[in-house]
Image (cartoon, rainbow, N blue to C red; front, side):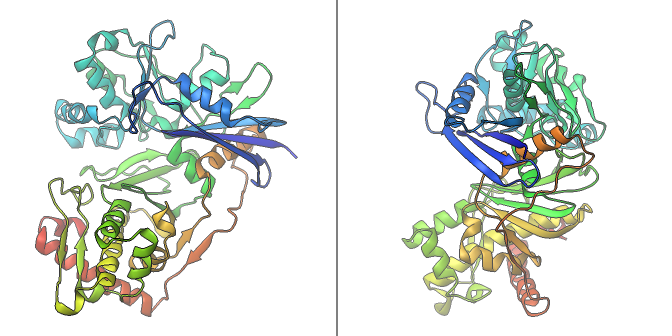
Amino acid sequence: MAIVAGIDSSTTRTRIVACDADTGAVLRDGRAPHPLPEGAGARTTETDPQYWLHSLGEAATGGLLESVRAIGVSAQQHGLIGLDAGGVLVRPALLWNDPRSAGAAAALIDALGGTTPWVEAIGSVPLPTYTIAKLRWLAEFEPASAKRIAEVLLPHDWLVWQLLGHPRRRTTDRGDASGTGYWSPLTGEYRQDLVKLALGHELRLPDVLGPAEPAGHTPEGLLISAGTGDNMAAALGLGLVPGDAVVSLGGNGTIFAVHEQAVVDTSGAVSSYADATGRHLPMVGTLNAAQVLRSTAAMLGCDLAGLSELALQSSPGSYGLVLLPYLDGERTPRLPHAAGTLTGLRAESMASQHLARAAVEGMLCNIADALDVLRAKGVAVRRVFLLGTVGRLPAVRRIAPLLFGLPVVIPPAGAHAARGAARQAAWALAGTPEPPQWELPEATTYAPDQEHDLAVGRAVRQQYGTVREQMHPETKSEAN
């Protein structure tokens, strides 16, 4: 039995799994937090990447990597590790969540003449998270560092380079490259003109490897696969195929689906990413997801479990209560200055269970609208994988299939990105045209009844949509 390992380096920690290369069964796992830079708060937005290596070493203790023949690496997307001409780190790595590049993203959009030229160039409109926006921010606010930077690596690129012993050749993969803002999933090529637009000069950029192409071997002979970004690795770990979509309910909502072609959406609502298999991962995002439920639970004086229990005591439609969950504005639909709205208050509806259900239905109706944005671009969605802590709440599991009108799969809690990285390593080790067929254990599917449940879900969404269009008439054409 060959053993492979997957490493996932997130914003806050490293997770490692060792798996059977044939079946995907997890044999061993470990984790360790990333050390925080001195003086850093809870929301770290830049760090010394050496901390990732320290965390990796701690997570791998106890013989976790014993007898491993190949390793894959997943890491947070959109980061920026700037090196000088000698390969020396110029400044601390900028992480995906650094908010300082918001103005830079807007300036880049204007500099190229609006959203349409960007979509035509890279399949997406650059967001503040994108690497290219960080380059523009450096050029404006840290010009000395910007001039020194000769090459840029993403977090997973840097970790692979370290594991291989600093070879002259630097590599990446198409999935992670598609989140930079200067590599196009439409053409499979870098856009040095966009790099120059952002930074003022061109860069040395890593070679983009094919899905099963190894990045190289360590001095000890251990194979290191191409690696990829965390969303792409999670899709690989979940075994997604065309027709599958993922809804990840964190503070924000992330919705993506496997598709055979890149999606071109000149409105900018859909970001066209590549995946780790040669396909594509068109993605939309919402600003409001789990926080809607947390805020409602706090208002009702309960925790999330209590909110879920209350919501199930109400009925579909929440006795006419409708919550538009735009607590932080909204990205999909585009309502940056909106606030949340609660309507339908009547004497019989003013009870905690109806407000709890209205919060769950409002959050999920907003996610369902985002899924419709993907469908409108020709992306097939036949089942939805629901991720995140709130996705496992009984109320969310019960209500989501009604409102999505689709089977909802609740995978077991686990290191899906790390397992996806391990699956990529097994693929590179085998050298086969397709990745090994690994089953996802213990996943539970909740399917709506094809008549009654679907009709109920449509009625709830119609009630929600009517209120949304009344409060925000500009969303009518977007939803339809």
